[in-house]
Length: 294
Image (cartoon, rainbow, N blue to C red; front, top):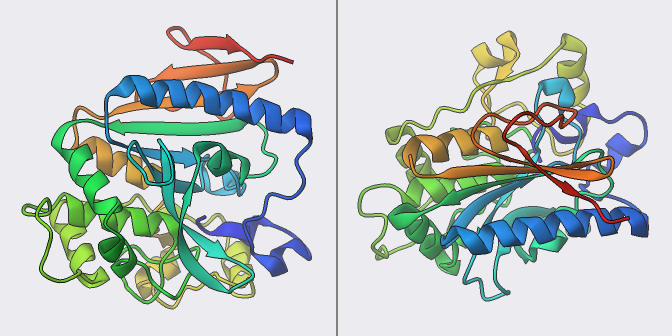
């Protein structure tokens, strides 16, 4: 979740919990059909780890289609292709690491239109290193912050959002020597130094108006006191987003492949390549179109 419910009006904004609410059985069936396609893609990829991102919180005002990312791991102890992710536990008022099946990962978005899921497969040594690091509980937990902010600055340790935890794990895993278990667990500052050294530079999230920036101050779990003042004045916030993670993966792992799934109407559009689908998921030449069973 990034910038989260700054987009939500009224009483909903007061909760700031990424709870999808009730989803009709027919909609759950459509989501599960998308999951089935995603699982086939992952099983055919031959990789140990993949970055997966889903829609959920509506961030279209910020020109973002995806809000939440995690790591799908082939050899997860929770089951093949379970997603390890940071998730804010609303009832406990704290961030936790959570292993969730691919179906649960998508269904936890609640009802979205269209249904979107993006996969970046990470082949070779880079994927193996990331899988090893993600499954190392000591390291994964060492990079978890107790203080959550959906708008966390990408290069400060005061807060953390779900995508920032993934970024820091990537940074640590892909630093030279990152494949060897350290004598002691790293800290987040070390991981962020690694990210900078590897060229991680998330494109700024453009806040569309001063009114949105002002209103965000009154939404729980959105904080701005970790951002540089110049960024705040310019309303250009460097936040780790799914798009930023994908760009970093593409930069560091040239063999990485992106597959985007979007269910709208009676079909699933499958696009392979780094050019994202448009907001309405309109297919172009070369896209695969699969029927959605009713």
